[in-house]
Image (cartoon, rainbow, N blue to C red; front, side, top):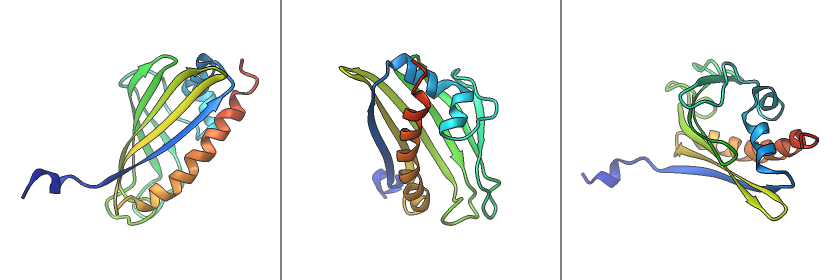
Length: 154
């Protein structure tokens, strides 16, 4: 059997938006636990430090307790913020199936502010199809909430 066949097929969610704020301002919104709770969920144990482990709590389902386990993988102030995003349970299908993904935020200066690019990668098909569909819509909403939370931070 060749190596390629062993690799699961994965999908990535990509959302890209330009905000009329400096990268430093967007960065603060992305990396402050208090502000995160306003655009995504309240994190527990969060610090924007490489290696830091933190969690989010969402709606439990079946065998899954609803805890999303995250670990900060990379921090480049005002440019790049990456964390692992794991949750779900092997016993679940659909919502709450096992998820082992990575969230990457990339900030870049543009003429009228900052381009914020989110890539949530590693959704295994077909196991994570429900999460992929739900979170594709969810992340689009999250980016508009980031815009709203960032207003008045400048």
